Length: 256
Ligand SMILES: Nc1ncnc2c1ncn2[C@@H]1O[C@H](COP(=O)(O)OP(=O)(O)OP(=O)(O)O)[C@@H](O)[C@H]1O
View 1 (cartoon, helix red, strand yellow):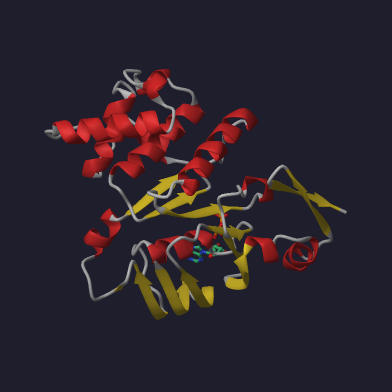
View 2: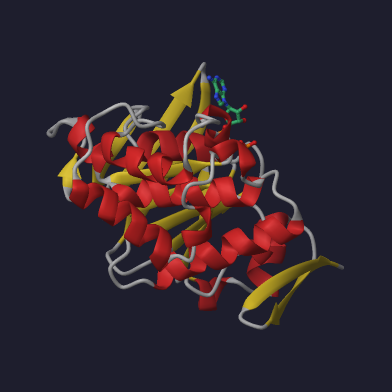
């Protein structure tokens, strides 16, 4: 799905990413875990083709960057961040925003086909959002808006869905709702591979299989969550003694 080989990136004389080697295969759901300033955004910008690496090669969905039209690739990659909701058309209905994912717009400005409408509604039903049908966006809670934005990304049937801190700014209840929602998408056999960016251990849901720990622009460790999500690795990664406590399929971190 994604292959980064010896990827480095310099911005204004600062080496922001250093020699990143990372492979994401079909059937894997990854967490990209890093503290502020570790290089997560820069890495995502490289994966989505908005930034070019200074050195190294990037292959996404089997296509090496530079050899294939980027807009074709981007259509197959869904992207959700915490800030997209600010751009939502407030008077439009939720289902129209979902539908607009087909056209890579945020509201509906194009002619739609019946089959697209049916697919949008089926997505809303499949992921338990039928109660949001016919609701103007301005009447939705922050968590409900985020669900609509995620469904909008699914509308284009992406092979890869990147979720860049999608729970940032949500209250604890809305966050739990969204995490459950994302977990369901991650468990869906017909769904896209997920790449979830966070710096919160408790957001790592059971559907995630792998984790890459990014520190100072370098991959500190990467591999299966069962091997890496533990006291020793996280204490070394953070440079502070921490305890990772599993509970009910999730993990919680405490500083000692
Ligand atoms: N245009 C730029 N010029 C110089 N340095 C930059 C530039 N953009 C980012 N950086 C630096 O590169 C490092 C990585 O930034 P990046 O935004 O990728 O990190 P991040 O992990 O996404 O951080 P956060 O979680 O705070 O958003 C930071 O130290 C940042 O200050």
